[in-house]
Amino acid sequence: MAKYQRLMDDVQQQIEAGIWPPGTKLPSLRQQVAQQGLSLMTVLHAYELLESQGWIVSRPQSGYYVAPRALAVKPLSVAISEKVDINDFVFDVLQATRDPSIVPFGSAFPDPALFPQRQLMRSLANVSHQLTASDALHNLPPGNATLRQLLAQRYARQGIMLSPDEIVITSGALEALNLSLQSLTEPGDYVVIEQPSFYGALQAIERLKLKALAIPSDPTHGIDLVQLEETLQRWPVKACWLMTTLQNPLGVTLTPERKQQLVELLAQHQVPMIEDDVYSELWNGTTPPLPAKAWDRQGNVLHCGSFSKSLVAGFRVGWVAAGKHAQRIQRLQLMSTLSTSAPMQLALADFLATRRYDVHLKRLRQILAKRQQMARQSLLKVLPARSTVTEASGGYFLWVTLPETINTIVLYQQALAAGISIAPGQLFATGDQFNHCFRLNTAWPWDTRAEAAMETLGRIMAEMAQS
Ligand SMILES: Cc1ncc(COP(=O)(O)O)c(C=O)c1O
Image (cartoon, rainbow, N blue to C red; front, side):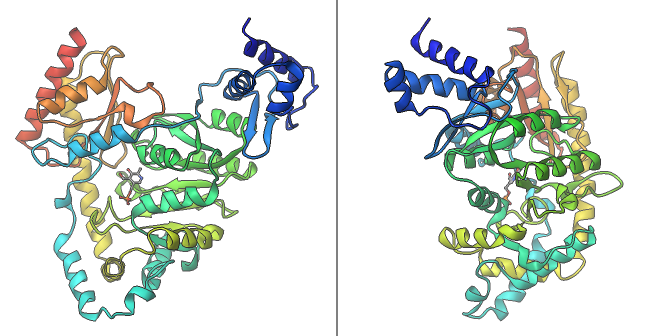
């Protein structure tokens, strides 16, 4: 038996025997080196493996501790990633979707022709006549007061009472999400995400040098709450980054009961939740979904929203309803991007002051639902046997699962050579669990070009399924 394995066995047996109860500090690496006569590398390797198996946890600048409830560890299908490495691939895929000659099935953006461009430009023109030199100062973090007030009124209409002072305006939801995560964590901390999840979460975790605990999510129910609870019991989780409505890429929306359970579970473990809620205005059905924030009684949910998916992508305006965390987020914003562009904030405040946004949203939802249905029908005709496709309740993504023999990175490359992009499953995971899946954007007009592209995609998939 290798030396590191012997040390692992010893430590496991000592934990099981109660010599080191949950939460106690283990002998340091140097103490083990001196006591066992092993090299530092061997001890470190054993401790890292024990950590990845859930027996122990490391705390930066403090040492290794027995994990809470480490006894009788059973393997979880929670994916633990000490190091997330996703950026290069995301850049390549995003680059491909920017070329207008490529059919944008892999795009993350909605068709901009669906947005009220002329009205927005009128708002921009209105405010530009009144802009003064000091407007840049008045719209520094937390952002334009009128815009924050209008957002607080939208929350109030959903029954969510929060003060405009709890809201920070940001450069898109991406900044809101990143600053929220940064405000809650230190490098080396554990963060819960979903599997599969939005690649922006994986990129942020990589950039902030955090460790990911990825809880399985499925297209029918969303995140597995049982596995989440076990993970919260076992690991010192500092924050969660989750989507509870129209999750990207699965399209799943948690039921109100499950949203409530989720919020209560996290409150019980005092783990704050960053709620990534950029698609919720694109619901399809009879009742608008409430965010998990609606059940938050302890100010534990940082709710991140955006206009990028529902009104205008190019203005880059989003926000976070951060409650008690708002001050820290403002400080982080002042130290990084300084503030969201003042004219854009003012133009949105002008636009939102009337009912135009709600009128636009109603029309947008209808068109997106119709396009999604057409794309799904067309896709179903060309999918290889044993494939499945989600039935989303809104938004503009479908998640396709192909037979496991088809690698969607190869499919992506072959489709791209034929002038079609897709978003391969690997973009949304820390491992290779979704290498036979892809996300399809359905927001674009379903015309002859799209139909022809779907047929080509079907031909490539059929060839791959046969080989
Ligand atoms: C799930 C999710 N969250 C956040 C964002 C970023 O939103 P914004 O464009 O407002 O920064 C995106 C954009 O693709 C997204 O899909």
